[in-house]
Image (tube, rainbow, N blue to C red; front, side, top):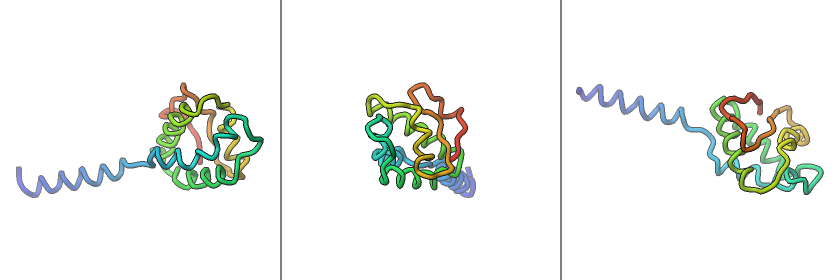
Length: 118
C-alpha cells in the first residue's frame, strides 16, 4: 500500500472518530444530578442548579447523535438513583423555562428511536 493511501486512511479514521464523538455521560450526569430531588418527588420545582444543568445540556443537544447520547446517559443515570417518576422528566425543561421537550425516560426507553428536542 502506498504511503499516500496510508495517510489518507489515517486522516479518514481520525476525522471519522472526531465526528462520532458526542457528549460524555459524565457531563450529562453532572448536569442533571441537581435534578434528583425533583425527579424523586422531593421538591415541587427543579432547583436553580438543575435548570442551569438542563440549559447547558440543551446547548449540547444540537445533533441527533448528541440527543441520543444524552437520552442514553439519562437512562443509565436515572437507573442508579432509585425510585423516581419518569413523568417528571419532561416537566424539567418546562419548569425551567425552556422550549425543549424530553420524553419520559425509564429503563425501557429506546433512545435510538425517540424524538425529542433540546
